Length: 134
Image 1: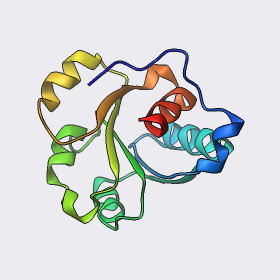
Image 2: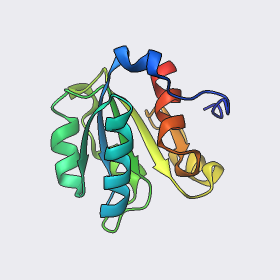
Image 3: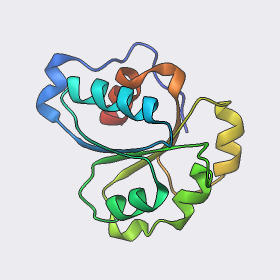
């Protein structure tokens, strides 16, 4: 997994490439912040607070991109991604989104079939630009 290009940001020109995004976080403030910023950038965004809701939404196959917070109150994001039936959403890019040390989380992922681990510290605009250009 490569580090993100610090110069890449979401631009108005990219709006025509609207993507459908799913985000799981157990913190209401994080959900609201993500939803507001992603919608303002032209993404169609669904946010969920509970892992069971995330699994149901993810496996519907209607999302282009899905983000799972690494640290959840009931399960960690890596364990949750291992429970997903990824064959039900083969075209959905799946990322772990974390405020923790990226290398530590990447070691925990260790070969799982996800597209990457992204830092919350980079901000919503930057990480959305990265995954769209992936």
